Length: 473
Image (cartoon, rainbow, N blue to C red):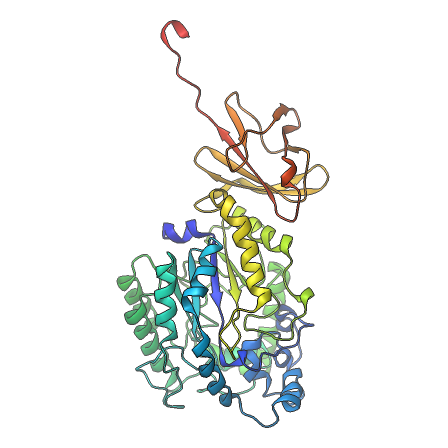
């Protein structure tokens, strides 16, 4: 795994599709529960705005009812015009500055989602919908801004779904697998990914759902990527197409897929893609692994229940201040990265206030504590609880262990830590803290300023003893 990725800890995902113009999805359901549902039309109620076009294919879905009330008989494709007009107000350098301020080291932009609309002026024209791409090079402009701000650019490509090639209603995961486009699509998708590699040299190649060719054609594509970007990273959603996937459209196949998904959700506690024959990084969605993993991993999630911008999300639908900071802490302690999504508005290319606020929360806390997060590795255990049922997480780098304490104040005993004669305990600014060793662990007096929604961070250093001088002095 490239060191740059393992050191990063925080990345920013950007979902910015035509669906961010109508900007609607129901907010009272999570996608994981839909995957585990046996309802044939479950995905018609998707909380993901970027699935709006698919939701419209179910006449009684919340999105269809909303669309009839607000937009009448307007087509999904008609949202292209206001989306492209909104680019006049886009400030890619401003986006990049706000992303970099959080401490993020990479940004993954959705270059093409399932609606098939490309955010770059592709030279690989869509045979089903000619010219279905943005005339402005959104990918290139954001890439230049991101790299100029000291971060790396990654690109998401929806390889397993493209509704310009297969527009059947997708009500369940079985439908999704059976609906991976065939015919002209595999060659089209491969040509576009090769074009993205040649033009933008993305540091992350992030596919979704599956890949529409068999492994014999996929492996040369990934070899080409690594040849062009030797320190590039490939995610775990490149499961090669197989004729067996076509069986997912049959009644026995549907039952088998539904049962498998239900077992996976119970086992993993959330949506975790099946492991393909090759990947660099695992990508649980709205889920966090319970412990350190053998394979590098990143949690991918939005700030609310959607990736694309949902104008109907309520304040309580967004991740809270303390939850967001602890989410990052917990993931880093387990050796993972957080790929946190922003969903810009489609009508004016702006980051919504609720999302911009959470980027500032990260910037305010990560900046002074970056040394305890970036370039660290898991300690002997990710964490535990301290007396008072306050959780603690650990990271390590060199001879330093960093302890993150949630909701604790005053004197706190770390039961996992044993002091040595040369132990030093400090704040992240280097100010010494009062501490003492006991049979129960290392007890440290937290500074008064440590109380609040943010985790308190303590640095525990095993300092080398000074060498003895002449005569043992």
